[in-house]
Image 1 (cartoon, rainbow over the protein chains, first blue to last red):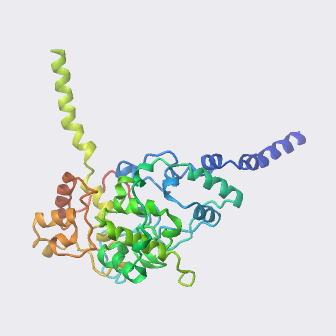
Image 2 (image 1 turned 120 degrees about the vertical axis):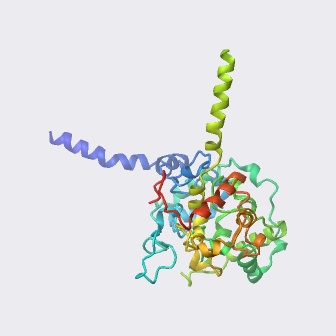
Image 3 (image 1 turned 180 degrees about the vertical axis):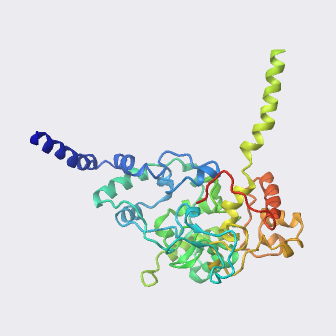
Length: 245
Length: 125
């Protein structure tokens, strides 16, 4: 009887180790990531479906991310969207404002705004394998075709910020340094390291092409300004923000 | 006779099902797109407000909203703030919302001042 018990215990304890021992990136994706991330597509087509999403879609990861960043991030995951992917869940708002509460004059996020993110941490070898598997997911090649970054359009940080804040108003939702900017968009001070330039060009031009119901509007950005903004984001991501965090 | 019946059923179905399938409810659209800045209940108090240098419009402020025409609200949604001499911080939603959805949204904004909110369908918390 004892032997049977010991054997059973051994099986129980060793089976998770066995299942995670596979170094195959696609296997890891299927086993550990598919529960939260959409790996097959298509993107949510209705608002109700959109609000069921709790993790970014990864089915076009190969069109979107830079591989070096993926490898680095999966070993050390940090929050990218201050209000979370599904920001509706993190908003605290009362329909009638009580007069005695004087401090609240806008909707606030639950708890500390920049909570640490709950995400799996991968080992270096696993991260490499998963990044390779992710970079193969390229269903949106036609969306990025025709976009090319023109590095001669670089206008520097100051003019870039004017474009980003005053001309197109992106700063209302996106942060250009930790804690400076809106909450509902993804932080953009890391965008240059995180995203492929062609993806940024294409996504800013028409977010709907990538995610039909996303809450980022089409800013009708002029082609020249589009190049300037993406160049600005790339320059911005080379700054050191560790002191600001 | 049989064919006529089938055609009739298809025609009826098109009238019932088509609008429901293509236009999102204005209520849902407001809670998804507008509330980032205008707030969950349209009081101009969205989450992004601390980061903005222009305060979003309080849609429940009847005194101000009464001075705006439906056309102006429609233009502001479709072409953005600059189309009605307002801030660039109000983006153009013409590419996101359909014509029908924008028209419904104008109507929905008109209700924010006075109608009590009924939480329908989606549980937002």
